[in-house]
Each structure stands twice: as C-alpha cells, then as structure tokens.
Length: 459
Image (cartoon, rainbow, N blue to C red; front, top):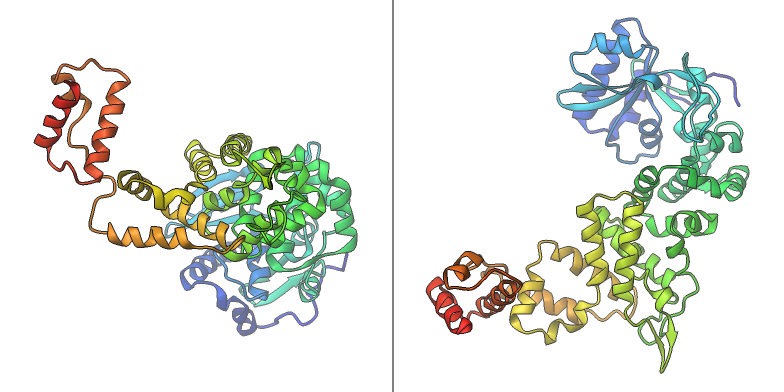
C-alpha cells in the first residue's frame, strides 16, 4: 500500500482534470458538479469516485457518476431537496438533480465481515480509509473536480497503465469480505481486457466455492453485466478457467468437451459453440437474449448419444426445462423467465419454417418477441454451419406480410360460441384456433363469414 499521496503524473490543474471528464455526457457532468459544489460550499470534501474515474482514464463511455464525501447521510439530506436512503447504515444516499440520480457515499472504514457480504460495523472517516476498503486498485481512484487532482492512494493508475486487476491490500481478505468480488474480478478482467494479477488470481482459484454464499440475485446481476459486455465470450472462458462457472452454472460448465456432429458444427464442442455466439453478436444489450444464448444448448449434455451420428434428441425441450430451473434459481422475474424458456424451447423451429402452413408461419412471425428468436437463430447458424437460408426466408416473409396483421383481432369470441349454443369448455380453444388459421390464410375475413363457419362447424 502506497502512502496517501496523489499518483505521479496526476493532473494538478482544473484544465487537465476537466480533460479527463471529456467522455461524460454534458448533463451528467453538470449534475455531478452541482452535487460536489453544494457539498463543498457546506465545508465538506467531495470527489468523483471509483468507476467514473477509472473509465475516464481509459476513455471509456460513462453512464453514471458516484461521489464520495466527508458529509454524513444526515448532512447530505439537509443540503439537497430530493434524496433517498439506499443504505444509510453504510453511508449511501441517492441525490436527485433534475431527475438524474447520483449515488453519494460518505467516506467510511469497515469492521470485520461476518457473513461474506456485510461488515459488522461502519465508521465514517476520511478518504485514505475509504480507498483501503475498496475491492480493486483501479476502482479506488478519486478525482477532485474543484482542482482536477487525481487522488491515487493504492497505485490504481499504475495498474490501469499495466492493464492489471489487483485487489486493494491482501486478496484473500478482500474476497473474504465480499465473495461477489470473485465474480467481479473476472467480469472486470474480461470487460477491460486486463490480466488478473498473480496473487489476486490465485486467491480467486482457491476461493471459488465461496461464491455460493452470495445471494443468487447479486450473482445474477453480475453475470448479466458480463453477458451484455462486448467481451462476453472472453468472460465466459474466464469463468470456466476460474472454476466459478462450475459453482454458479454447473449445467453450462458441462457443455465443455461435449462433441457435436462436425458436418453441422465444425467449430467444436458445445461450450466453444456457445462462446462463439457471443463473439459474433457482442455486445448484446438485451439480457433476455443474452441468457437465452447462454442456455440455448444447455440440454445437449444430458441428451448426448451416438447412433448413426452424434445426436441430441429432444435437447430443446430438455433445455427449456433446465433453463426454467436456472432462471428461477437466479430469481429472474417471471416474465423474463418465460421469455428465456420460450427462446430455448423454440430455437430449432426455424428448421421447419419453409414447410409451415401459412397460418402457422404467420403466427410464428407475429410473436411479440420474434426479433429475439430470429437473432438467436442467426447467431446459432453463424456459430455453426453458417447456413442462413431459414433466416433469409423469414426476413423475406416478414416483408411480404408487412401490410398484413400477423396477429389480427379475432372475428368472434367465446361469447359468440355460447350464443350459438355451445357449452364452455376446451373445445372453445380448438374452434377459435381453427378460425384464426382460416383468418390468417385469408379464407375468412369478416365477422359474418366467421359466424357462418362456426355454425357449420358446430353442425
């Protein structure tokens, strides 16, 4: 640990400090400067902290600014009109400036961690102690926007220049405090294209089982950040190499080494294929699509068999069931879980699109999330045999049907069937489905024709 003095070469003027902030959107920067200005006028130190400083130094896009200060939560609340408590016991307050949230954290020192997540005590202190309690050196940088001074107390800028992920202080101690940092080390390494410093990496390898002490919600959020980054494929490989994949996604880890028929999958085994999807599609901004890409072939290892060739009979259906279990384990919301499961279950339907009757095809193309299904299919093809015939066919049909409603309003309802003398029951679904087929195929287009068809059908 270095002495608490600014790093060599740090900006020492407002102009040079402002140059670091060029990547910030103007409105974001203006709001962050206002927060710091209010705190300083009240006699408190206020600095930009952590990720925003790291990303500015790396010239990466910045979407939010965290601020660290000597002001206590009570003092922060008294200085701003709109605030929200999001962790008062940890000194974290959300300040709203023109509807934009800024996380403002009081400098703190933390006591012993008892549960691998929360410190037993928190003491509000100064910037030196605050730097020492952070996870990685590149996340322990501060920038004083009033002077442009870069404050580096832990050699973070040196590690940025060396492209290294290094824990602040002793790696095992940092990971023991919060086991999620094991996963964060891999995520930052892949996102930034950095190596993990040797002793930090060794601690990750030794402590991977500890990740299971972290709540599945926190693991999910960290995993989704990895999957939606531009280097997601590299992140998946590092998860596997570290042993973390076996701990949090054992069914995905089992894909490694599962061979596929080379005539359809010249790229290699199931895990290689899955990583290749992310290489070809990155960055994936849609978390649902990203999870479906990760899990689309999760059913292959348990259905692997060799007959006339390597086969995975029923792997889409098996995979959908496994995806449902995984999504529920990760506490994914019900709607998103259903969407992931449907993507996994239906990812092979494209094999049959050119044989579908028109009503079935229109119903498939008319799904509200069809673009997700189509993108998963495209990447699945590109990451294997490369044949985009079905993809091109669907695009062509979407253009042909552009002026037609793919999911038209029903011409009649169950109430109409009751009026015709039919008792409610499962047959309602059958009749209305048949009628929708005829409507999609443009054989019936009016309510009167639909009622005539229903009378004949019931007769």
